[in-house]
Length: 479
Image (cartoon, rainbow, N blue to C red):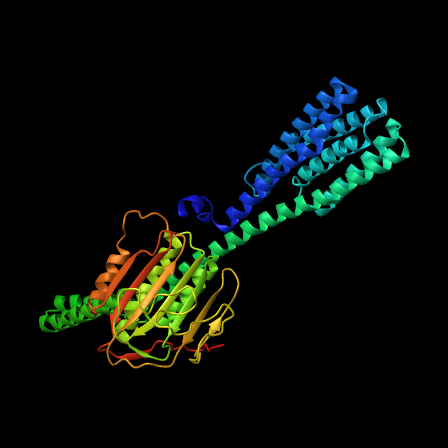
């Protein structure tokens, strides 16, 4: 099934909207053949070869309008210049086809009025709908519609058709025009808005990454700035003392330089490994915001939210969340992502208590949040924050606090839209090494054949300073 639907599911939302819009116009071209071309062919029984030529003209008009719609949509998205020449050809062919049909009606009064009505209304409505895609101004679309309807009315009068024919052709052409022109204008506006929104989401994601880089740069500056300044001053002092013959003091200063350099090395290592400020809840909030900015619906489920976790475990899991979020953004076309953090007192198999079930509960039967942001089950909800809609996320804490006297904490991150596996990077290998240092394990791979990917991290709950998994950053409350 994944192979059959992959051509659609692997597309982004803007690509899906664009594909749907384009094929809608292609389908309307087929409808135009039935509405306009076949009635034109039916007139051949009365008017002879002229009916065949009218059929070919209407068929050519239908094809050119379909091409114009495709090029106009590309122009709407800024991918090519406006197809002015093709639009002029379509407008001329529309006017010529309508006049030819009305003249045939005037020349052969026995010609069925319903047939000519279908031909004229099809030419006008289909042509005006395509021309409306060639402009973004509402007043131009309205002026085009009014001009088309007025042109049909004036044409029937100039040809000399009776009042009944004038009213019939004008009404049907006006109805089709008033339907197709606004619809085409709205389709172009909607397509532009969807792509602009997607561009805004991508920009937000890039800004979030840039902000994270700036934060890391600030941390590195805070660590290295003062120490490097001290090293430079003491090195200069040692050089001056050496020139003056105070070798003992120079050696002492260089010893101090060596100590500061080692301290700086240790602090830099702590920054790189995330030991300074790597907080699990902070990373979960950051992942939620970054994924939502990229248009990915993210759900974070904090079970046993009040449980205290060792500081080392929190730091390691925080780095797993950060790396997994980066991989979701860079190596998948995800639309949904779910992050689950739970305490496994017994220590089950990979994907055990942290894995999600389709009925909204975990494998341990505990309740999780419903789409409305409420918990299902008897356990009280603690610390819930939610947001809805596409590109939104919710954070839910479920269940009472559990102790940490044994067992392990399990982090599961699962997303759809996984791309075919390529050459492996060093990110997951680094995470495995980080978790192995704490006695933990990391499993990552496809969850099923439908393009879902699951990453499971397990860290034992023994030793280390304890911190609450639901601890809030300073200045931020719960809603």
